[in-house]
Amino acid sequence: MFTNSILAFFIFSIANAYSVLVIQPGPSFSHQQPIMSLTEALVAKGHHVFAVTPNEVQGLQSDNYTHVDLSFSYTMYAGGTGNKADKEALNLQKPMTLWEFIEPFRQTTKIPPRQFKSEAFLKFQKKVKAENLRFDVVIGQWCYIPFICGMTRYLSSSDRCPPIISFSTFSKDEFNEAALGSLPHPSFIPLVTPFTDKMSLWQKIQNWAISEIFFPKLRDIMEEAAEEFFRQNYGPGAGRLVAGCWSNVSLVINTGNFVTAYPRPLSPNVIEVGPMHIRAPEKLPQNLQEWLDGAKEGVIYFSLGSNMRSKSLPQEVLSNLLRVFRELPDGYRVLWKWEEDEQIPGQSENILTTKWSPQQSVLAHPKVKVFMMQGGHQSFQEAVHYGVPTIGIPWFADQEANVLRMETLGIGVLLKPQNLYCYKRIKSIVDRILHDDR
Image (cartoon, helix red, strand yellow):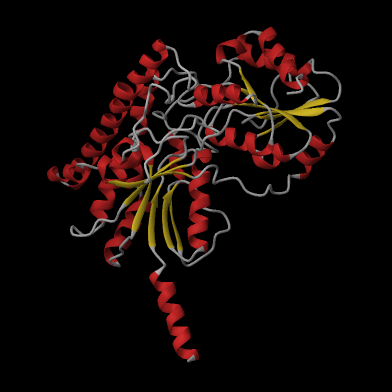
């Protein structure tokens, strides 16, 4: 009886353990955090996860976890994390409108080809072929689906291609949801436009243009780049590996919800899971703990995220920010994410710079009263979770839409990048956030 019970247990365990391929090409730490959390959870459940990503899950040691290291990809972003960026690196160090973002988006199509031709991935590719590895499901970054789908088909036997899950670290998956029956509804659901759910006629027209022109253009750019990659590297007929990839997605997982976006109708195979990356705050480094503890009135935390760098700000903007912070009332301090070893020229004594900080732990500290940020989706979610009012300085993509959502929720204020050239504008917004009881 006992032996039969043990046998049944192992059969049940094996039947519920899956082989999962994760491909998340984007070299942006904030957008890697959610997939790292999902990877960790899948491994903990006993599934075999093969993660092709720029970031390894630190401390995750398991026979069920294989990481294909694409960390070199950070050099493909200007000012990339800890590395010297190459000459053709994607420059995200300036404000851009949606339509201006088309050319930088075109540059992002160069990321998967270099990753798929890297030594680490070629070694993994040989392992898949040599060991006849098979994947039950593939989880791929939403905007790179043609590359992910094409590579999945190439790695799989011709008669067995696993289902693909699109994983979006934005509030919506503008590329894949419509194919699954979740229409965009541009008349009352803003896309990445800086509108609310109560749009004027002109705003509705702009929102419609984004839905019907802008996003199809981006999808075409990505699909054409993927076809070209497979033709050049796997033969003239290999472009067919990309055919129909957008409609090959079986499920969409979004890390947004009705807080960071607006309530909207969804089909059953589009699932909003919210902020997957939030976890119990880790212990702060001693210098940061003492700095935050020592602020009698409170702390302003200034960070422009993992893509935009404070060191890229023009000198006039830096001067205005330094003046505003220098003139804060006694008892207020500033923690500033600054990517250089040296201090900011002209930095006052109430400012502490740090190249990196555990952001969630900082936001969890009771002395942090204001979060000056770029409007990124993950930072937005963290600010909500820890209850810290925001000053959003959006630069590109979905950031202005996120900051406007913060305003409609009454938890933050928009500070446009062009207003950083105005000392009085910065000061009035900082004073408003610090002293408005709401």
